[in-house]
Length: 123
Ligand code: HEC
Image 1 (spheres, rainbow, N blue to C red):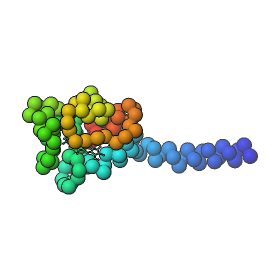
Image 2 (cartoon, protein in one colour):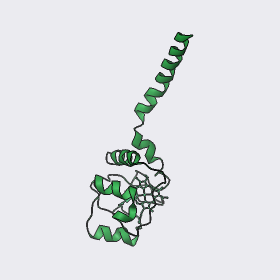
Image 3 (spheres, rainbow, N blue to C red):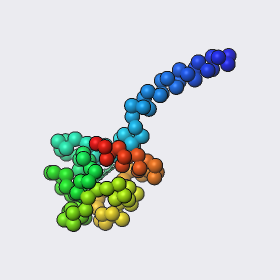
Image 4 (cartoon, rainbow, N blue to C red):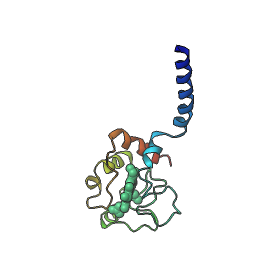
């Protein structure tokens, strides 16, 4: 009985282990962003701008996306995305780009925001 349980546990671990290794936490969180954002600069018609190469990218600078006046103002000032700014934006968009259009998915914890920023900054 005891060995049966151990075998079952080992099987469960072998099934879930590789899956978790393939998908970092940030990629899973990003699924909540994908209804509006793509990582493919060529994909048109999304509700939000593409997020490829976000690290160091100037705010509001995705080619072909029609941003809010708030983002156009941020772009004119030359602000760029770094880790602090993006963490702040996901926690409270108005604190970083007052009057912008995005409301981030509800229920993101600080750890989720950090994970998705890490993920996006390597895409
Ligand atoms: C319901 C749609 C929607 C969802 C879901 C959403 N966003 Fe957005 N996002 C937008 C829109 C629209 C804008 C443009 C805002 C503006 O012009 O004011 C935007 C802008 C952004 C920008 C600024 C990009 C730039 O070019 O400067 C970042 C970064 C961003 N979103 C990240 C995220 C992340 C990360 C998530 C998931 C945790 C997310 N968004 C979820 C709609 C969404």
